[in-house]
Length: 258
View 1: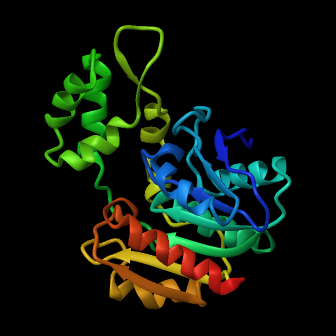
View 2: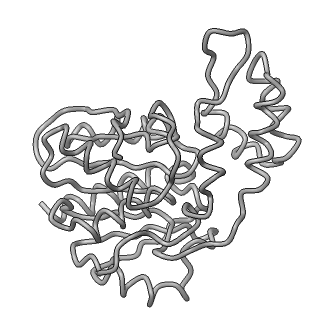
């Protein structure tokens, strides 16, 4: 079953750029980038299932999530798009490109490879559960609860973007934490699809990140043979740590295709 995903659409002409966030992210995390990119192209930033303002449903399989994106494209009358995905969103984008290459004008993958990864989000789940139980009245209290499990302030600020105040005096999580945790194995797994995507591809990685190492590149190029690899002086959240370099690299790649 595909879902009606929440999304931001700047409007405009030409082949759109569809932006797909990573685990625990949302379209809101990309607003500053969208503001810049929309000056020259149509941009759609979406919330994946169980994230942001999109519906909460069981299942985080990459084929299902790519089908959600295709359904969104269909609903917006988009035949082909440039896809940009970070981390989990990169796996969604790779899955879509492998299963429906005719819908993809180009592929941009930020700091993820087409493979399975080990479990490394235990502290994040514990921190979010602590916030859920603690019912913080404000963001200062929420940060203190997150800090019981996460030392890095940047990570806490990122996770705090999932908090909102509804019809109550406390902040609440807007993500489907139960659904995400129940199917975490799928999220850590490899993207869907069997064949290679042979269209133009940009893979951006952080020099201080271990998600796309030199040792992974041969296998990556088997799946994405037309890949150009660009390394930024950043960690896993390279679009937040090096925003200008990230934006310009994307712009240069897309401009070269015009």
